[in-house]
Length: 198
Image (cartoon, rainbow, N blue to C red; front, side):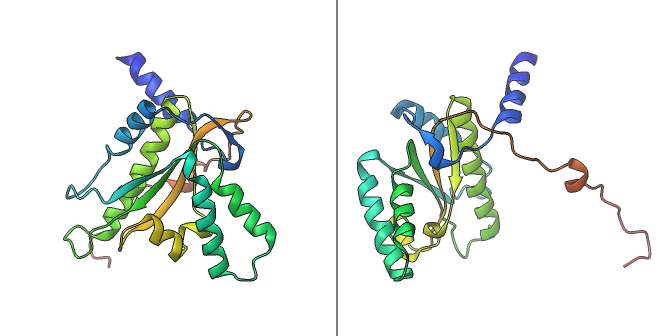
């Protein structure tokens, strides 16, 4: 059991994101993708509301995604330069499997929307970890397209929003470790108020 725990800790300690524009294929097989999504769905979910969805965009749908992005960009920024449209085209055709993480909170429920949004975030994190465990690299990005009304309407039901575009593939080159915060900067011990203090 100790070895299993050590390997899990090693997995957690070595996971890092890859830049989607630098990924190459192939993405996960259907069986691997099912395993990744099954693990992604195994997250804290107060109230059992499943306040998240996964939208899969296949390789054969990337041209349609590019058209959607061009339409959205033309509406939101009619004066967008050709270079911006070119970036949108490239985004739609990044390599690997594309999973759109959708936050789907139940409004007016006793479980606060904030807690439901946190659950969606943990689903995204579990997806990244599962991809890493299977030997893939994943990149979770947003950008203007995640906030575009036209793109949102095409991928989400009313009341839902895009939490991110997650690309799953392989790195073209070794991933460089990014700076991590020192624990002293992000951890503090609680000091309870003394009796009589406000």
